[in-house]
Image (cartoon, rainbow, N blue to C red; front, side, top):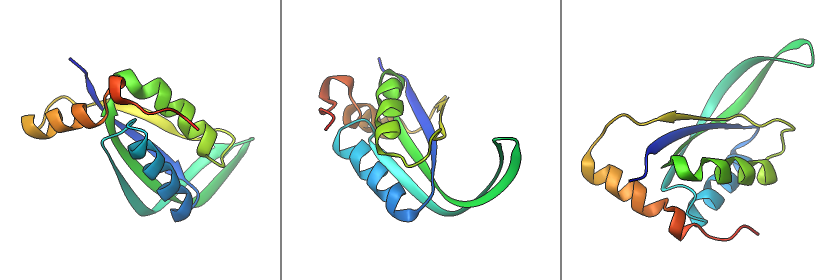
Amino acid sequence: MSKEVVIFITAGSQAEAEKIARRLVEEKFAACVNIIPGAVSVFRWEGKVNQENEVLLIVKSVAELLEKVVDRVKQLHSYQVPEVIALPIIGGAPDYLKWLREESSVGRAGNQE
């Protein structure tokens, strides 16, 4: 049985977030992606502390697809080092988790362009 995960991705714009979200769902790498505008990120990059407005994507998928998600995001993302981190889902509504597994299935994952 597939282990469900939540994957966090940040994007530099709403348009980029929507492009990534749509591709992940269309290609069956994710069952659902929430796009949350208004994230403010404070981070160290190339020795300097930066603060940027970003858009947060919350991706629902399965662990077996994580590597494919990372690869696809790297292809689509404008950042040199995009944030893609995954956390396990430890529980939830059984019918929702079943739907999540069915819609982000390794066997059903589409081809990358």
